[in-house]
Amino acid sequence: MAPTGWRYALLVWAYALLSFGVASMIKIAVYRLLDHREARQERHLSRVEGNLMPHATKFR
Image (tube, rainbow, N blue to C red):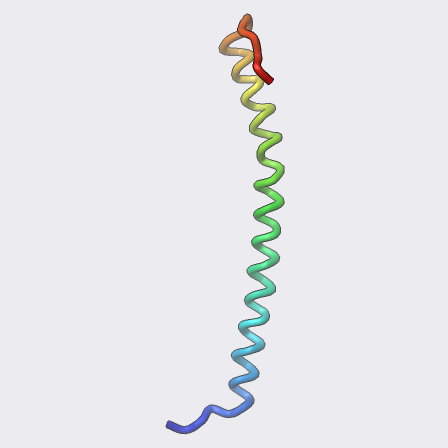
């Protein structure tokens, strides 16, 4: 089998580094979305619990 050469080797490395960067940016964006989700869910659950049990004592 003949060697592919430096041109294709560098192309593969460039693709790998570029895809790593894109995947990292997507991962960071998803982590930020998931981090803010807890506050939204807590507000929603407090409204739902308040409507279902208006006279119950809340433990929060």
